[in-house]
Length: 365
Image (cartoon, rainbow, N blue to C red; front, side):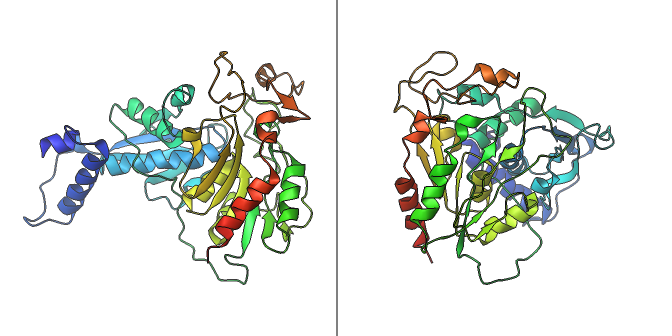
């Protein structure tokens, strides 16, 4: 039993599952009655997880919080500091949510601060590591414990029930734009418009997307964070800039599936176990982003492109198709093969390919 708890001669996921089961039995009394108090040295450690990352990153980070509490039940009390309280709303593993310093009062001294990162991203062309695992690895390193990834999706929680309405399960969400800073992620408005046209009369689309970020969220090196989402003709509704994060989550809860690039929407769809067709191109490794129930359309390795370190054969991780002239560091890392404002790796993906994958999922009841 000691070896199982320590993860010796057993995989970490199994060890964590046994620890969770035994902790549950102990709290319920188990076959031999309640366990005795463990003393002050076993009091849960109170940790504040801080992140200034984008909302999609925050959604993926929920997997690390979930995994920490499954692997080490009862050992930690976690609070979160971020700009996106709606991501952590109703999360049973988050004791409280705080806004970053300068937006709300300083976090209580009872917490030990952990400035969250995912440095494994720099090894993502060399290791089969997922974004969620990157968060887990860093959190484990910061706390000095093993935090294996114990979920295959992010975790979003709801207390409110959904009131049925006629479009439940009858529409797809489509996000054709994105932030202006990482333009290599964009497939192009015209391509998304062709998808909508190809599926006219077969699929009802609702267009979604952000407009302006919170005023206080302005990473200094990123330039303009305002999103760009030109309207698509032929959609059932255009809700760009009209939803809070929580309202967007509820739209995903009701939809049949989503069409998007590598963005917040794909992480939300994964969390809510909704089908997604993700137009990814060659910028990011497949293992880093792929989720169950998602068709991750990539072209990694299809072109002789190099990453910023000059290496061939993997994802390029470049930021911009062409320089924007905004004085940020991102202008120094541009696409090697731009074609009419779109990376060639993205242009290789056709609207017909995307439309056919939507139809494959759309056959589900």
